Image 1 (cartoon, helix red, strand yellow):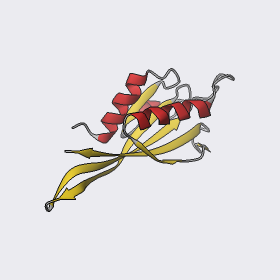
Image 2 (tube, one colour):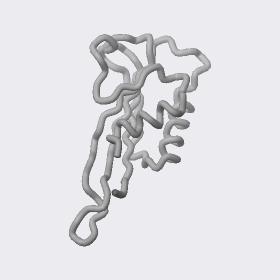
Image 3 (spheres, one colour):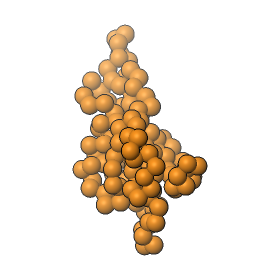
Image 4 (cartoon, helix red, strand yellow):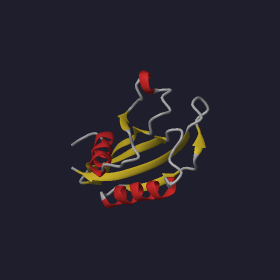
Length: 126
């Protein structure tokens, strides 16, 4: 079974979202930390807990992923951020991920990029 972040990365990459330039797992490399010319998605694991107990043992894993998006500066005027995020969440839901939380948009204090954080979870039976 793939790590939760790898599962979400695989799904996101298969969607071929034209507004996501790069998807990173666990950390953004130093060379891209201050790059505001790209829209990047950072995936970090938030949960990997045994679940679905029966007969004194677990039968599944509850997996969680934090999805952070850092939007590039100078987005096209006709780009609808909210529609893009809704489409992403709908695709995650269709793939069996539960949207736990969709946080408000914020501004990154270091780069002044608009950011968005979404938390998802999925219960995988073993």
